[in-house]
Length: 342
Image (cartoon, rainbow, N blue to C red; front, side, top):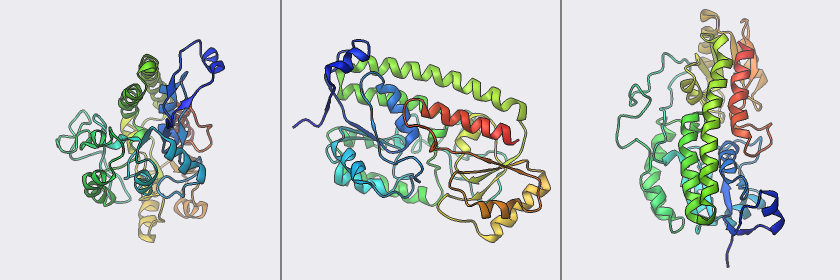
């Protein structure tokens, strides 16, 4: 039996007369990627979001509706196990017939190494060239045969063989999985999303690719808008709550001075807090960017005895309605929050 969504005739009239046949059921892990997929599918269908707003992607318990969405999916787009390790098993169990695409392993995705320590110096990403691309051929694009393995369904055993070694290295600090905060990566993914949807739904391929092209133009305009927002405060110093923003920092050449926590799943050591507080005092750091789920007592401890201000930044858009407009709003809000805090 087909697991595809049949849109009723009234929907075709609403979307300007586009002819709909069987539209793929699509599931997506996090809201920013869901937004990109929703933008490509505009006028044809809508994807299901797995990690609900306000939840952390690193640790998440599937609701029955989330499990049902994965089980019904023809296509799944996710960042990869480096961001949502729990989802790997869920895909093998629930989405074994779906075509699964890991964006962190997609050709053209530029990955950055995790930064070590509480304080950040001038950006030096080691394996990347002056254009931001990784010089090591084995890292470039991170395809690793992943997409081919899923063309006829989710080959879980092959996925395990191909990627668990990479995951082990990433978990020990190799690559930062918050790659959606690079608009350049988002542009690459829009093409990939359109291609995957078109392969599953050739009748609407023209719509998918037209939407992806329009979305890429919107991202170009967004980057210009964000650069203009940040320009008046360029050179200001800020600290982030956890080290998740270097893709944004690189994209707009606006580096952070350090991070209170290495990840959003653990509190920093007293020594790390002391190191951050000293940096704030000695270098006149103007702003500390917390997050919606931040520990206010911890942030206050870090700010004790300093004149730095607090801003609240959200890389997942938990307070924004999921959909096609979420991704640009996340990036825009981050820039606005940073500028206001500085």
